[in-house]
Image (tube, rainbow, N blue to C red; front, top):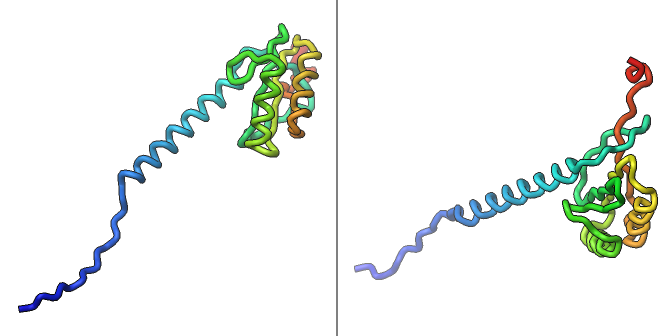
Length: 144
């Protein structure tokens, strides 16, 4: 009679439940982020035109700040005052150092609000700030 047990080597198995959870959460994250990305650029603002306007690629930590024609500031579909915007930009600067801000101002918006937004960016140490504009049509196309 043999009483000794033979050690059997078991093949390592891949745990599927945590793997499926991670894939699902990643999918939900990207769907949510893409929904906010499209909402920010679809706010009803008449952008000014510029001959030097060029399309840009979105980056991580990039924020769109919308300045409406009546001077209201909108961020993430929420109207904000200047102190609220300053708090948000301070937090963003901590989480995404080197992040950028794109100001989408209506062509009829008051310059004072855009300067106030620029001041908030400077106070939060966000140096990468740009303005959104549409490419200007050639003069020949406008004459027709």
